[in-house]
Amino acid sequence: MNPVQVLKIGGNIIDDNQALAAFLEAFSSSGSPRILVHGGGRRASEISRRLGIEPKMVEGRRVTDAASLEVVTMVYGGLINKNIVAFLQSKGTDALGLSGADMNLIPAWKRKSGDVDYGFVGDIDPANINSEKLEWLLDAGITPVFCALTHDGEGSLLNTNADTLAAGIARALAAKRPTELHLCFEKHGVLSDMNDDNSVIPELLQSNFIQMKKDGLVFEGMIPKLENAFAATAAGVQVIIRHALDHSTGTRLRIDE
Amino acid sequence: MNPVQVLKIGGNIIDDNQALAAFLEAFSSSGSPRILVHGGGRRASEISRRLGIEPKMVEGRRVTDAASLEVVTMVYGGLINKNIVAFLQSKGTDALGLSGADMNLIPAWKRKSGDVDYGFVGDIDPANINSEKLEWLLDAGITPVFCALTHDGEGSLLNTNADTLAAGIARALAAKRPTELHLCFEKHGVLSDMNDDNSVIPELLQSNFIQMKKDGLVFEGMIPKLENAFAATAAGVQVIIRHALDHSTGTRLRIDE
Image (tube, rainbow over all chains, first blue to last red):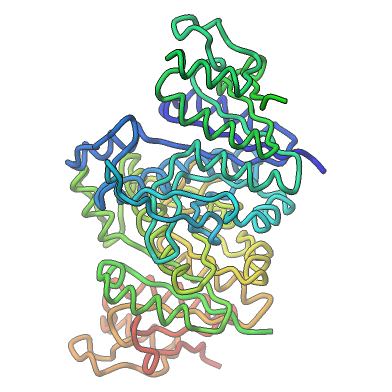
């Protein structure tokens, strides 16, 4: 069975029309079955401000009150998602834009408030992802394009981190077929020296990551990304952290033997 | 083969949360294969104004410049569509939110500028609608929920009138199976007296409509709706124009023998 690729892209590429077009062209020319997951937080923040709603962030994560949920629903589910779909269609990729509510593909639950009340934020369990329906779409030659929205099954949409969503989808698919997860961003991989873009670690062992965290060598925003990614690795997913426009380098994750 | 129902709802119901919920509950409890098509122009205009973009209308139709296209993409494709999908899922309907770009279901072309340049407005030909893919979704128990967006196949989304879209979809499906088109709005049907809500015409012949138009008895906004609807009737679709929350009355269209 062909390996399936789950690619995740974030704000830095989504906000750069030329880079996004280059990424999507390469994505379209891939022969593998594939799924795209996109964020779009910067665009959401910009539109939120234009609507007079000041975005609230805690530790780099959006606090999603009812007004912010409307904004991310518009921006992720509408503006970014549908434009990516239209572009991919123009390149011959039979894209289908999705949220986790569509076909109930990704059920979630609203996060309980702890120290911080993140509002309408959805946590997911990969075991609940409707992987059969995803396989059905892939087998029909359809390329799912997910925005970072899920739902609670009771009528409310929820905002879910795009890295988490991509890792969850990859884990759900890995039970049935070889699965790769490409976490694409503006760097060429995980860096051993945050100040040196050429210090890409080609292979990162989980034990190394734990040590690097202890030593304060991992950039804060990278920690949840890598924790999700190692959970996917442990579930049999081949994880590559790489630049959106460059396949030639990147960091592969590995669980210690 | 079961008849398929294509239901179209517009702004007056979409803007009223309670009415929308009542409509969607009834929609969910129907046993027939069905497709929902929604507009959302009023909501788009409201959000457009909040973004500092004054909506431009000519003869009741939106002039869709690039900024307005972004707004309708957000509002139709994101805000309204994904919330309807989440609500339907909560009622046990396996909804899938779609634009015409998704799976290339509804190819369109940008309208040539005539007296008025409507901008990014898409015209459609029912013959180009991917009815096989729609049938495939319906046969899998999926309920497609269309927003009024199409695409030009060259990467651009287009704004298409929701009545036109619904009539086009019904015409495309009618070639293969019995198809009903329910154009739902705030009145109980086509009125013989615009000022009397109880003057619903139970059956409207095309010849009557032509005469009523000549006599100035048809409300302006109703004319393109009825022209589209009669084109669907001529293609074998059973068309009912009715109140969104009341099945008991309504106007059925008929082509003269």
